[in-house]
Image 1 (cartoon, one colour):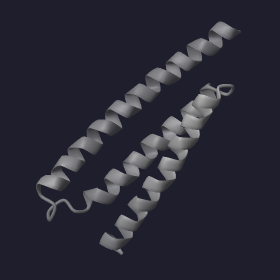
Image 2 (cartoon, helix red, strand yellow; image 1 turned 90 degrees about the horizontal axis):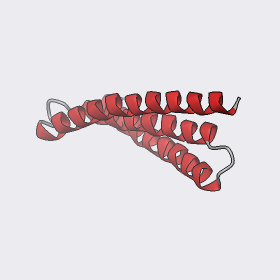
Image 3 (spheres, helix red, strand yellow; image 1 turned 90 degrees about the vertical axis):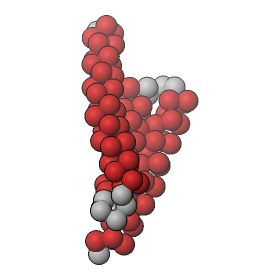
Length: 100
């Protein structure tokens, strides 16, 4: 039973790595475009913040679900969720200021 749990953790880890890779590439590409030509790509700023919030939220949930006993990992998961909330708030404020 314990081996199956570890296997699931590895599969979730691979999934998390894939999500980090895909969203990270999108964030970097959109960030570069937004900083190179901000007038044309100003709408990318809220999207970058919201994608970063999604990434931190997924990381926080993963930390809390897979490492239930360790206080360090629980703290890291809570930190990721707090960062997710902060980035979502900045993204929402940015979206409202640009599009609202």
